[in-house]
Length: 152
Image (cartoon, rainbow, N blue to C red):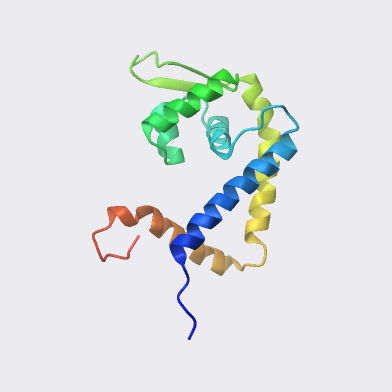
C-alpha cells in the first residue's frame, strides 16, 4: 500500500520552486536591470487591467495584508514603476497608478506568464487541472471553514 502524499511538504516545496522559477524566467525575458519579482508582477498585471486601483483592491486581489502591500508599493515607487496618491474623493484612500517604466515591463511579463502556464499544464488533462484548481481553492479557504468541514 502506498503511503499518503506529503501534501504540506509538496505544496510548500512547489510554491518555493515556482517563485524561484518565475523570478528567473521573468529576469531572463525582461533583459532590464531590475526585473520584477512575482509579487511586483502581480501588481503590474492588476494595474494593467485596473489602473488607479486602491491599495485595498490590490491587497485583496493579491491576497496580501495591508502592511505587505504598502511595503511592496513603496519599493515599486522607488523603481519608478508605479505612483501612489490620495483618492480625490477620500484622502484616506490611496490609489496606485502604473507609470511608464512599469508599463515597459509588461510585454516580457506576459510572455513569461504564458510560458509558465504552458509548462505547468503540460502533461495534464483539463479534468486533472480542474481537480488541482479545486483542491488549491479548498486550501485557500480552509482556515475559514469550521473544523472538520472539507467543503471550499
